[in-house]
Amino acid sequence: MTQGDLVLMGPPGSGKGTQARRMVDELGYVQLATGDLFRAHLAQGTELGKLAQNYMSKGQYVPDDVTVKMVRERLADIPRKTRIVFDGFPRTVAQAEALDRLLKECGRSLTAVLLLEVPRDELLKRLGTRATCSRCQTVYSLAVRPPKVPGVCDRCGGPVSATARSDESPEVVKKRLEVYEAETKPVIEYYEKRGILKRVSGVGAMDEIGARLMALLERRKTPRSTA
Ligand code: ADP
Ligand code: ZN
Image (cartoon, rainbow, N blue to C red):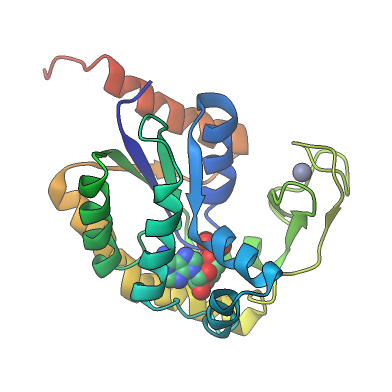
């Protein structure tokens, strides 16, 4: 097992949420997904949820101060020994800097930042046909990765329906990809400079992609001699 926390990055539709959940199921990580936290707030009707929805429905990012505050509060509930996989956070350089501070404050550190890379054409195809399990929130793409049994979640057997999230109209999808390019690409450079970024192809079967990620994490355990 790895020593520290992980960040899983990738554009909308790259499948990072699905892969983060695998790390929870198979490696015992706790997932900290800012998109899920915002949606939970919205479902509970909190002020934060309402505020976040204004941005999410337009494909924009929720302001950094609001996002960081929410992450700080969630972090306080996670025991220090539990490894975290951050999913969808940080998305801006300011958030990445804030994460460094937050981790330091609670004696944590990042082992690696894993970036799932998927070509834009493929993202558009996936995002246009997303479907979600209403029980465990696993996300499918009916065009690219449907459940094995139509309408039934592979993971939990719950019902999978194509009820699109409010942020998935074609216009909003485009906007989200633009915002990713402008705001989140610099975060990739931020971690690349630090030497902890690992790029992984996010194209292929979910299990293959999962295996690629596992291989990267394994490799850290027994470093090879640099030839
Ligand atoms: P996706 O990865 O497909 O974009 P998410 O569930 O991670 O989906 O995020 C949905 C929306 O929630 C984003 O489009 C954005 O509006 C908001 N959001 C999630 N995480 C962040 C973040 N770290 N900073 C700002 N906004 C965020
Ligand atoms: Zn499910």
